[in-house]
Amino acid sequence: METALPSDISASYPADANSSSAKSRPRVLYLDGLRAVAALYVLIHHCLYQYSNANIYLGIERVLAGVFCFGHYGVCIFIVLSGFCLIMPTLHRDFVLHGGLTAFFTKRARRLLPPYYCSLILTIVLIATVIGHRTGMRWDVCLPLTAKSIVTHILLIHNLFGDMFYRLNYVYWSLAVEWQIYPLFPVLLLGWRRIGPGKTLGILATLVTVVFVATRHSSLQGLMPQFWLLFGLGMLAASIAYGSGDRWLNLRAKAPWGALALISTALLILISVVKIKHGFGAQATDFDFIVGAWAFSLLVYISLAQDHPLRIALQWRPLVFVGEFSYSLYLLHAPLIQILLLYVLKPLGLSQTTNGWLLTILALLICLPLSYLFFLAFERPFITKKTLGRTRPATEGHPDRAESAG
Image (cartoon, rainbow, N blue to C red; front, top):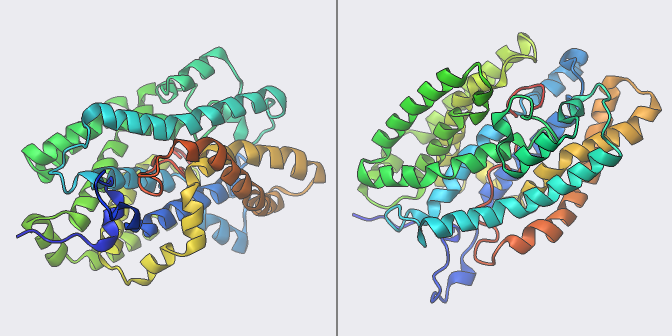
């Protein structure tokens, strides 16, 4: 027996050309809100942790700053979101891509690349003029500007070179990782159709484990294979929450999603507290799978619990608005933070902790409006009317591989 999709999921499907109701389909607003929360979290993280000595905060400041010390978690959330959003248009087509592979890759390139290349040009200009010298702060990992750094970033392969991973802009690595995940998506869809999601994810988990272990201590660790599995978990979350058919209906009805979300949240908080107590320098990637499992259970739960306070909060209009341009915010915030720190705060001679808090306030006031203007000029023109407000690049808020660049 087929089950009807919740009304708000129709926004995630490409509108049929002959559909008279296409314009009236509502958007899945809580996804925009979740993007906004993740994007703002990453921005605050990058403001508070600008110095190599991450333990500069003491007392109550240490507790407050500790809440924002896990910038890498944001990347995990966005990768899960990417799998969630990309599979949704296929749920009523037996997991078949509309328009085939060519249409899929064309749409992804149009959505991801123009804003990225525009921000890349802007970043290169800024490095060549005002933020190209080392200052002992986070931005140092982005320097120097070289021909290799430019070429590898244009080709989106910079994550495969250890010395290029954080070069030019310490958030760009995740753009390359996401771009390299896209070819995996059609393969996973094929597995979804032929052998089912469970076996497909089992094979994927095996592959991820092998590649993760094999590349752990090489420059190829920049492949971040653990994100392949997180992407698959996002696909599974959307299938469970909005898929039609007895399999998905039974999973929705019988599994204790509220309890799973609560348990995974408690586990995530526990490991985060342990990491804080043992020093902020703990390897950020060590718990990616746990963060991914948490994001998976949370997405399923809030997708099903339409009246849950968390879902309602994520649909708050200011959050949804920020979520609309969170990709632009992700692309721009790092060089803007460096400009604010170098030319506004550093001349004041304040302490590192004071700089961190003031930088957070200034960045929110400056980065948000400038990112929105960037969105209007260089991102929105490449969003078709059919897809505006639907699927976006996962790295819209993005977020980092290690706490040091995070």
